[in-house]
Length: 227
Image (tube, rainbow, N blue to C red; front, side, top):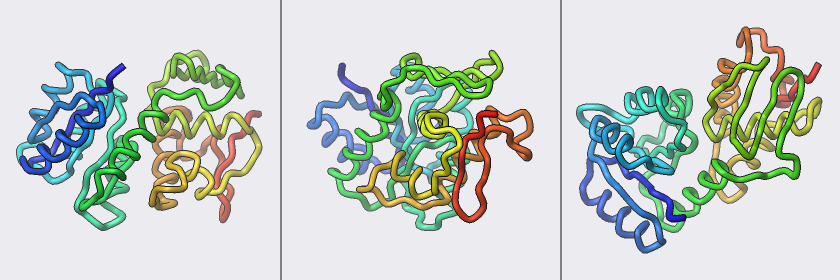
């Protein structure tokens, strides 16, 4: 099935360039020039992935993510010219799944899109359902319940929880988790994992400040505690 990509950027030349290249790669592409128009387009077109600029008029990328995450967990990849790590981390904190820094090559962009789409829909382990403590994760339906309560996760949060739950008690370094989520071919920062863990804890933990399920192993990384 053809995947729909929504490109959101206030630069018409970039929207045209990305749209034409992605169309050549077999994607259906829709565009928007700011966050406000992107919200309308997303509701009408139901994209499979959003490529999102940060700095835009009327409604910037951060505001779009904040509004869009209230109604959809569709993967979001930031297109950002900002080089500061804090800007990327802020986007992840709002609910973006990944980022690529301008200027970028089209082949790298397509590879990143495919990787994020795989994360959003793949079944990476033989077992369809994972159960640990009172959390149940179903890869086929992409659903998570905590104590019988349904929890909505982004694709990156879902994959991160699946990795940890599949090996309870095992300590994963940040780089291990980053590689599992993004692949070795992509540049990433270890702090990305910290942001995803923090977001995940706010959704599955009764008290994110004193986590029961995802334990920090200081100086090493994280592990899932099943008891």
